[in-house]
Length: 298
Image 1 (tube, rainbow, N blue to C red):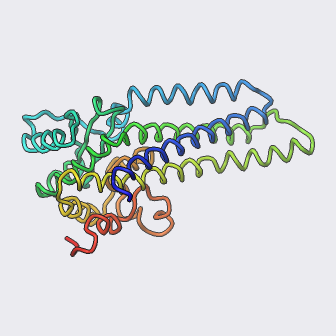
Image 2: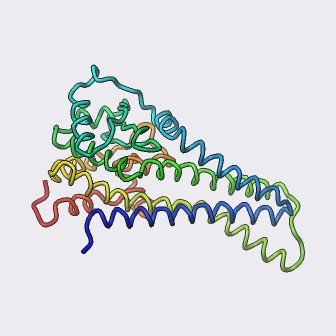
Image 3: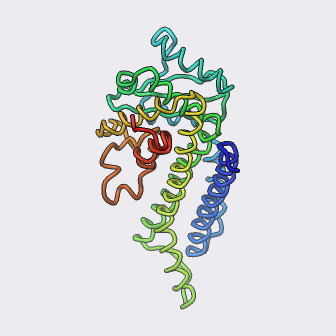
């Protein structure tokens, strides 16, 4: 019989498979460009760059994401109640106390980052702090601590870097192709060139779809883990309802870090029309339903 813990292990395995697909796409893009331009050095450069970016992401992930989000560190004296909530839930989860950051933004949201549980950080917006009741705030913090405990924070940050790297490689090739360049000739070379160009153009879309697959699965898992941690799923369900009802985007919303947040930072517009297909988060209604089951919605 499947349990939360067996699903957790299954999701970890699936995530590493998806990460392997990322590396395949990067190597594929590098190989295609090197073939078309008859320069093996391009492939070597792509592989070295991807490894280097992974290393940078591993050691500096929390600082990179916090800087992109405009988050500032806060001390216990600034918000004793918040620190007490995080400390109590960290003890319950068997995790070290993460660093806490505040984002000055009226939109309610939060995220966790860091390479491991000993170098983790949690950031919340001023809007979230002002809007939620204590049980709802506990639900959100438990959700973010679950991301840390599930090792989502490292993988999610590396995904940011790999998606960006693939997009940069594709963009460089497309720009250089407009200005001409040396490529293999002949009929077979022409066919391969067309296939290669199509692959490179589609590679950012492929990378984005892999990113979405990782993010959506892990949001459901973190919701379930957070509810198990607090023993009160109604708290997180209530928080998700308030967060989704806000609607307005965050002031510093960007595609690179969108999947890290508990709710899509682009607000209601990310759940309408074609944007819904590329949303980094499952609909709030589905998450609330999964938390509450057949019980009356909060």
